[in-house]
Amino acid sequence: MKKILLTGVLAVCFGATFPVVAAEQTVTMDIQKMTCALCPLTVRKAMERVDGVQDVGVDFDSKIATVTFDDSKTTAAAVAQASTEIGYPATLVQN
Image (cartoon, rainbow, N blue to C red; front, side, top):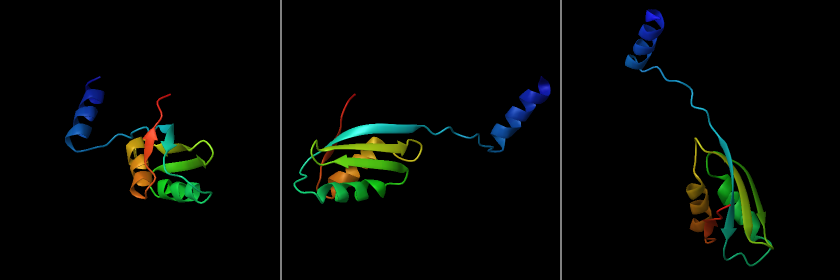
């Protein structure tokens, strides 16, 4: 028991890191100002550039984006901001 405790204390003292489990998260966002068939492509490309984004689907008719991302690398707010910055304001839909 003392060996296990000592090993843990030494690991903490010398900066050992323990792996963080990343969680895949999927969110739905309302996308505003999409007026043509090219708008969803533009939104998708902007969102895909955010580090950690794994998949983006944008539906023009419903003005909805479905985004899957690694929550250890980014947030839903950062993904929405990427769309907003290119002129298509995105807001998270609460499920």
